[in-house]
Image (cartoon, rainbow, N blue to C red; front, side, top):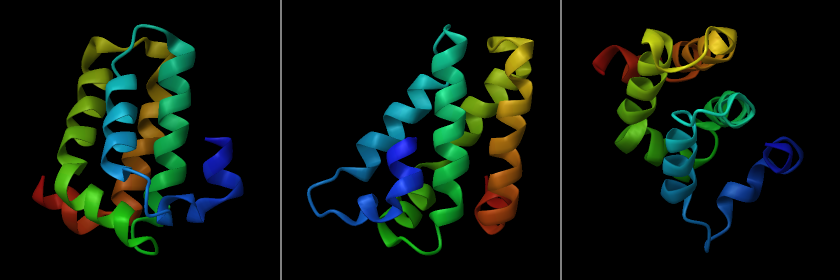
Length: 106
C-alpha cells in the first residue's frame, strides 16, 4: 500500500504481474485477520483511481474486477467482521467513482 502511494508508476514495470498482485489482494480480502483485510481494502482504494491512467491496471480491472466486487459483497454479506464494513464501503465507493461502466455491467 505504501509503495503504491509513493510510486504509483510501479505498476508500469514490465516484469510486474499486475494480475497476480490483484488476485492476491482479492484473496486477502477473505482472510480472517482484520489487519490483513484492512490493508487489502486500502490497497484497492489506492489502486482503483489509477484504472484510467495506468493501462495494465485498467486491463486487469476489466478482466478480473468482477472477482473483486464479489469478494467485497461477500465480506459485507457477513464473511468479514462488522468493524471492517467502512473499509469495504471505500472499495465500493472507488469502484463506483472510477469504474462505473464496468460496475454496472457486473
